[in-house]
Image 1: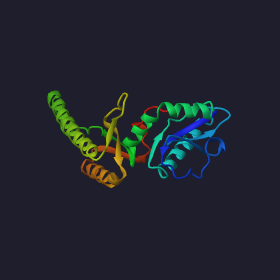
Image 2: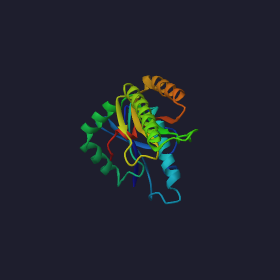
Image 3: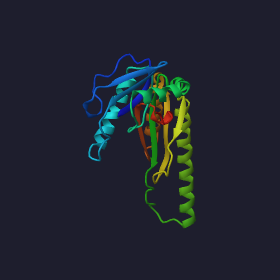
Image 4: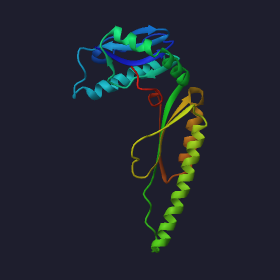
Amino acid sequence: MIHVYAFAEELDELPESAGLDGAPLERRSVDGVTAVFSRRAAPSSQESLRDDALAHGAVVDALMERATAVLPVRFGEVVADEAALDASVEARVATFRRAFEDVRDCVELALRVWAAAAPEAETPVTGADYLGARAAEESQRRAAVDSLDRDVSSLARAVSLRGGTAAPGELLGAAYLVPRRRLDDARRVVQAFADAHEGLTVVFTGPWPPFSFVEEPA
Protein backbone atom coordinates (compact mmCIF):
# COMPACT_ATOMS: atom_id res chain seq x y z
CA MET A 1 0.00 0.00 0.00
CA ILE A 2 1.31 3.44 -0.98
CA HIS A 3 0.53 6.53 1.10
CA VAL A 4 0.64 9.72 -1.00
CA TYR A 5 1.72 13.04 0.55
CA ALA A 6 1.75 15.48 -2.34
CA PHE A 7 2.42 16.14 -5.99
CA ALA A 8 5.28 18.50 -6.73
CA GLU A 9 6.81 20.47 -9.56
CA GLU A 10 10.58 20.75 -9.93
CA LEU A 11 11.33 18.96 -6.66
CA ASP A 12 15.07 19.35 -6.02
CA GLU A 13 15.35 16.68 -3.36
CA LEU A 14 13.27 14.72 -0.89
CA PRO A 15 13.10 15.87 2.74
CA GLU A 16 15.53 14.09 5.04
CA SER A 17 12.74 13.09 7.43
CA ALA A 18 11.03 9.71 7.19
CA GLY A 19 7.40 9.15 6.30
CA LEU A 20 4.69 7.36 8.23
CA ASP A 21 5.80 4.34 10.25
CA GLY A 22 9.38 5.50 9.78
CA ALA A 23 9.34 4.43 6.13
CA PRO A 24 11.64 6.28 3.74
CA LEU A 25 10.10 8.82 1.40
CA GLU A 26 10.09 7.94 -2.29
CA ARG A 27 9.13 9.72 -5.48
CA ARG A 28 7.96 8.91 -8.98
CA SER A 29 7.73 11.38 -11.85
CA VAL A 30 5.34 11.26 -14.78
CA ASP A 31 5.58 13.98 -17.44
CA GLY A 32 7.04 16.48 -14.97
CA VAL A 33 4.60 15.67 -12.14
CA THR A 34 6.38 14.16 -9.13
CA ALA A 35 4.40 12.10 -6.62
CA VAL A 36 5.92 11.84 -3.12
CA PHE A 37 4.92 8.76 -1.13
CA SER A 38 5.96 6.09 1.33
CA ARG A 39 4.97 2.48 1.76
CA ARG A 40 2.67 1.13 4.48
CA ALA A 41 1.58 -2.30 5.53
CA ALA A 42 -1.70 -1.12 7.08
CA PRO A 43 -3.75 2.07 7.50
CA SER A 44 -3.56 4.23 10.61
CA SER A 45 -5.22 2.94 13.77
CA GLN A 46 -7.41 5.08 16.00
CA GLU A 47 -4.50 5.36 18.43
CA SER A 48 -2.00 6.52 15.80
CA LEU A 49 -4.34 8.66 13.70
CA ARG A 50 -3.42 12.03 15.20
CA ASP A 51 0.33 11.42 15.18
CA ASP A 52 0.18 10.07 11.64
CA ALA A 53 -1.77 13.10 10.43
CA LEU A 54 0.82 15.41 11.99
CA ALA A 55 3.63 13.44 10.37
CA HIS A 56 1.86 13.68 7.02
CA GLY A 57 1.58 17.45 7.40
CA ALA A 58 5.25 17.74 8.35
CA VAL A 59 6.28 16.03 5.12
CA VAL A 60 4.10 18.37 3.06
CA ASP A 61 5.56 21.40 4.89
CA ALA A 62 9.08 20.19 4.12
CA LEU A 63 8.23 19.75 0.45
CA MET A 64 7.11 23.39 0.27
CA GLU A 65 10.74 24.42 0.80
CA ARG A 66 12.07 22.13 -1.94
CA ALA A 67 9.73 22.54 -4.91
CA THR A 68 8.46 25.43 -7.00
CA ALA A 69 4.86 24.25 -6.53
CA VAL A 70 3.23 21.67 -4.26
CA LEU A 71 -0.24 20.18 -4.42
CA PRO A 72 -0.82 18.65 -0.96
CA VAL A 73 -2.89 15.49 -0.66
CA ARG A 74 -5.39 15.11 2.15
CA PHE A 75 -4.24 12.71 4.84
CA GLY A 76 -5.23 9.11 4.21
CA GLU A 77 -4.93 9.03 0.41
CA VAL A 78 -3.55 5.62 -0.65
CA VAL A 79 -3.14 3.64 -3.85
CA ALA A 80 -2.37 -0.04 -4.27
CA ASP A 81 1.02 0.17 -5.95
CA GLU A 82 3.30 2.12 -8.30
CA ALA A 83 1.30 1.12 -11.36
CA ALA A 84 -1.89 2.53 -9.86
CA LEU A 85 -0.07 5.72 -8.87
CA ASP A 86 1.38 6.18 -12.35
CA ALA A 87 -2.01 5.60 -13.95
CA SER A 88 -3.63 8.17 -11.66
CA VAL A 89 -1.04 10.80 -12.55
CA GLU A 90 -1.07 10.03 -16.26
CA ALA A 91 -4.85 10.49 -16.39
CA ARG A 92 -4.59 14.00 -14.93
CA VAL A 93 -1.30 15.47 -16.09
CA ALA A 94 -3.03 18.46 -17.69
CA THR A 95 -5.03 19.09 -14.50
CA PHE A 96 -1.90 18.94 -12.37
CA ARG A 97 -0.08 21.37 -14.63
CA ARG A 98 -2.91 23.90 -14.40
CA ALA A 99 -2.95 23.50 -10.62
CA PHE A 100 0.81 24.01 -10.41
CA GLU A 101 0.36 27.25 -12.32
CA ASP A 102 -2.30 28.37 -9.83
CA VAL A 103 -0.29 27.72 -6.65
CA ARG A 104 3.29 28.26 -7.82
CA ASP A 105 5.32 30.33 -5.32
CA CYS A 106 2.23 30.81 -3.13
CA VAL A 107 1.23 29.75 0.38
CA GLU A 108 -2.05 29.58 2.24
CA LEU A 109 -2.92 32.05 5.01
CA ALA A 110 -5.96 31.47 7.23
CA LEU A 111 -7.91 34.35 8.78
CA ARG A 112 -10.77 34.20 11.28
CA VAL A 113 -12.47 37.09 13.04
CA TRP A 114 -14.93 36.91 15.95
CA ALA A 115 -16.93 39.59 17.74
CA ALA A 116 -16.48 39.83 21.49
CA ALA A 117 -19.56 39.56 23.68
CA ALA A 118 -21.44 42.85 23.93
CA PRO A 119 -20.77 44.69 27.23
CA GLU A 120 -23.61 45.31 29.65
CA ALA A 121 -25.21 48.74 29.27
CA GLU A 122 -24.25 51.14 32.07
CA THR A 123 -27.71 52.71 32.16
CA PRO A 124 -31.10 51.15 31.49
CA VAL A 125 -32.28 51.40 27.89
CA THR A 126 -35.51 50.52 26.16
CA GLY A 127 -35.74 47.39 24.10
CA ALA A 128 -35.90 49.43 20.91
CA ASP A 129 -32.83 51.47 21.89
CA TYR A 130 -30.92 48.31 22.75
CA LEU A 131 -31.77 46.59 19.49
CA GLY A 132 -30.95 49.74 17.53
CA ALA A 133 -27.56 50.08 19.20
CA ARG A 134 -26.77 46.43 18.61
CA ALA A 135 -27.76 46.69 14.95
CA ALA A 136 -25.58 49.77 14.47
CA GLU A 137 -22.64 48.09 16.18
CA GLU A 138 -23.07 44.95 14.09
CA SER A 139 -23.23 47.01 10.90
CA GLN A 140 -20.00 48.82 11.79
CA ARG A 141 -18.25 45.54 12.59
CA ARG A 142 -19.43 43.94 9.38
CA ALA A 143 -18.25 46.91 7.32
CA ALA A 144 -14.84 46.82 9.00
CA VAL A 145 -14.43 43.07 8.49
CA ASP A 146 -15.56 43.30 4.87
CA SER A 147 -12.94 45.99 4.33
CA LEU A 148 -10.28 43.74 5.89
CA ASP A 149 -11.31 40.87 3.63
CA ARG A 150 -11.05 43.10 0.55
CA ASP A 151 -7.61 44.34 1.60
CA VAL A 152 -6.21 40.85 2.13
CA SER A 153 -7.94 39.54 -1.00
CA SER A 154 -6.24 42.25 -3.04
CA LEU A 155 -2.89 40.67 -2.09
CA ALA A 156 -4.04 37.12 -2.85
CA ARG A 157 -4.21 35.05 -6.01
CA ALA A 158 -7.34 33.27 -4.78
CA VAL A 159 -9.69 33.20 -1.77
CA SER A 160 -11.58 30.30 -0.21
CA LEU A 161 -14.32 31.05 2.32
CA ARG A 162 -14.72 28.54 5.14
CA GLY A 163 -17.74 26.35 4.57
CA GLY A 164 -20.18 24.99 7.11
CA THR A 165 -21.90 26.68 10.01
CA ALA A 166 -20.07 29.68 11.43
CA ALA A 167 -19.14 29.67 15.10
CA PRO A 168 -21.14 32.02 17.37
CA GLY A 169 -19.96 35.57 16.81
CA GLU A 170 -17.78 34.63 13.83
CA LEU A 171 -17.64 37.40 11.24
CA LEU A 172 -15.07 35.97 8.85
CA GLY A 173 -13.50 32.61 8.12
CA ALA A 174 -11.36 32.50 4.99
CA ALA A 175 -8.17 31.16 3.45
CA TYR A 176 -6.05 33.22 1.07
CA LEU A 177 -3.58 31.99 -1.53
CA VAL A 178 -0.86 34.60 -1.22
CA PRO A 179 2.39 34.92 -3.21
CA ARG A 180 5.36 34.53 -0.90
CA ARG A 181 6.57 38.01 -1.81
CA ARG A 182 3.32 39.49 -0.42
CA LEU A 183 3.41 37.68 2.94
CA ASP A 184 4.74 40.65 4.90
CA ASP A 185 2.18 42.95 3.28
CA ALA A 186 -0.67 40.64 4.34
CA ARG A 187 0.67 40.42 7.88
CA ARG A 188 0.89 44.21 8.15
CA VAL A 189 -2.69 44.65 6.92
CA VAL A 190 -4.08 42.15 9.44
CA GLN A 191 -1.98 43.47 12.34
CA ALA A 192 -3.10 47.05 11.67
CA PHE A 193 -6.72 45.89 11.65
CA ALA A 194 -6.31 43.96 14.91
CA ASP A 195 -4.66 46.95 16.60
CA ALA A 196 -7.52 49.23 15.53
CA HIS A 197 -10.35 46.87 16.56
CA GLU A 198 -9.81 45.69 20.13
CA GLY A 199 -13.40 44.50 20.34
CA LEU A 200 -12.72 41.82 17.73
CA THR A 201 -10.70 38.64 18.07
CA VAL A 202 -8.42 38.16 15.07
CA VAL A 203 -6.61 34.87 14.42
CA PHE A 204 -4.22 34.87 11.44
CA THR A 205 -2.17 31.73 10.81
CA GLY A 206 0.25 30.41 8.21
CA PRO A 207 1.99 30.14 5.94
CA TRP A 208 0.56 26.70 5.15
CA PRO A 209 0.61 24.44 2.11
CA PRO A 210 -2.33 25.34 -0.16
CA PHE A 211 -4.74 22.63 1.02
CA SER A 212 -7.78 24.87 0.41
CA PHE A 213 -6.84 25.53 -3.20
CA VAL A 214 -6.30 22.11 -4.73
CA GLU A 215 -8.74 19.49 -5.92
CA GLU A 216 -9.02 16.26 -4.00
CA PRO A 217 -6.08 14.42 -5.48
CA ALA A 218 -5.04 11.00 -6.30
